[in-house]
Length: 196
Image 1: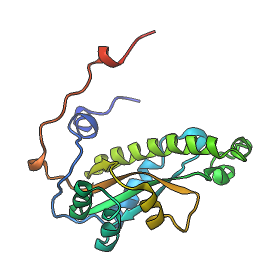
Image 2 (image 1 turned 180 degrees about the vertical axis):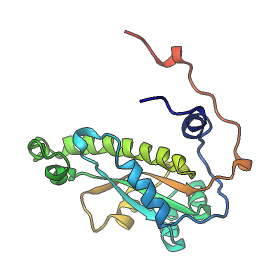
Image 3 (image 1 turned 90 degrees about the vertical axis):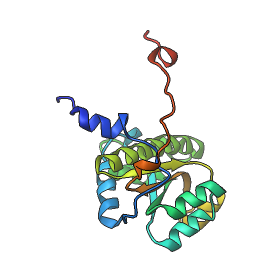
């Protein structure tokens, strides 16, 4: 495979930003389905795909999510066209016969909740990162955040799925670049890397 072009690299990485302000352009089901169809494809451990998403498109759903967030994050959620809860299914192993059918991977996780929790956190975090890149690839922007009460979010959005826990949340829309602050610094290669 050849490398992707510089304009795509700019969109995905170099010029991709975390947005707190969005244009007044709605986000609908077609966009979120397109994001899912991309973000479900990259790798997770044993293809476990533990992310469980709740897409808050209505004002009612965004308000319910905002009520679980810190003050500044609550306003970001209310003012965004959409928001999403990235959850993780601690019982992802139940789907492994479908997702990893060439061996009995389900047995690797049965009876070991702590192992499943760690693995679900790792792989759902990967899927959340894929969501950010998928949204950028499709011309949307995101504002991923912590700063919320996980127990409240779980009660509000996953009460009917007791094995699902929230990982992080994000706003979603078409970012207003005129309201971006200067980009914060990043570490140089030598500060964060060693070649062994």
